[in-house]
Image 1 (tube, chains in turn brown, red):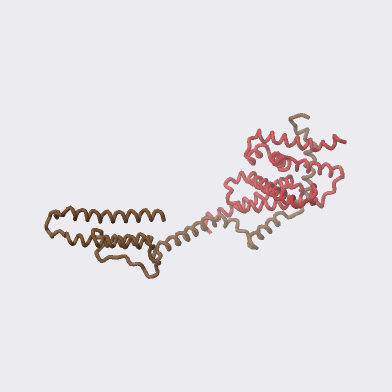
Image 2 (cartoon, helix red, strand yellow):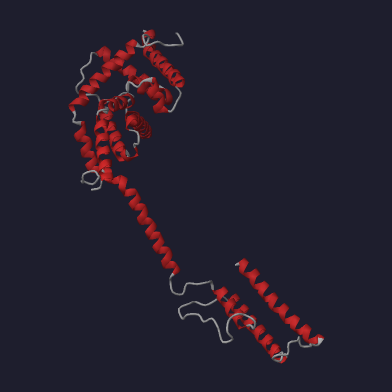
Length: 185
Length: 178
């Protein structure tokens, strides 16, 4: 058989296909196709007239609605009472606030609201350690307070300097330990 | 109702009317794939339902026919896949058509030849079958075939040639034996 077929080679089969088509089309033309399609469209739309054109509009309206809902949820989370930094941060802020040299006034202390579960054990221990260190430092500073208008650095003994340095290092260690633990959590 | 909305509605109505003029083309393609008129009519309805749902995506009214025939092809191929799966569980279904056109009263010889043709088309590999049906039943030109299938005209021609040869071989197979 030839590799390349011509339309003539296929004439008989084409004629058969035409005949098949004619018979099928004769059947198809007896059916009211348009009515059937409309009925199915109505069924698909739940008995209503198919809103073909409204579908075009529905997409941006739905998108805008979704954006509004998402924005609402986002703002409600932000504005929720009691929402704020995690308990570890609050504890740390409270402890640091008690240390001299920080911006908070001496009497300032962070207080948890009654509904809150409180900070973790780690945060509590850090807070305690920092408060203690802060108190020690304050006592130390009171002891070696610079007289007003002195305008010069007080003379400290080597022992006093070592003590201050030791306390500073202790605070540093606690803070670095706290940072390390927070990362692990 | 604003003018934009009215324009869109008018456009959709115009496209719907134009789409309806191609219903016989769609039906013929569905016939080529489904091999019986009743299924072809059901499939044509499916095609129009899908087309109406996506009517908003038509940006070039000039390409409406090709777009519609592409939906027809995809719908028929999906239907064939489902049918194939269904047949796995329905061994009792004969290779011939379950439903025949009630209006047809062919001569026995013609019926036999038609049955052979149906079997031959059914046996065609997927890609060849698509080209064959769109060309022989859908009456698409080579350019339209290339556009519908996203192929080069040369590829379309070679596939069609192979499909025709396979159908011809299958049709003459029985005759040669006799």
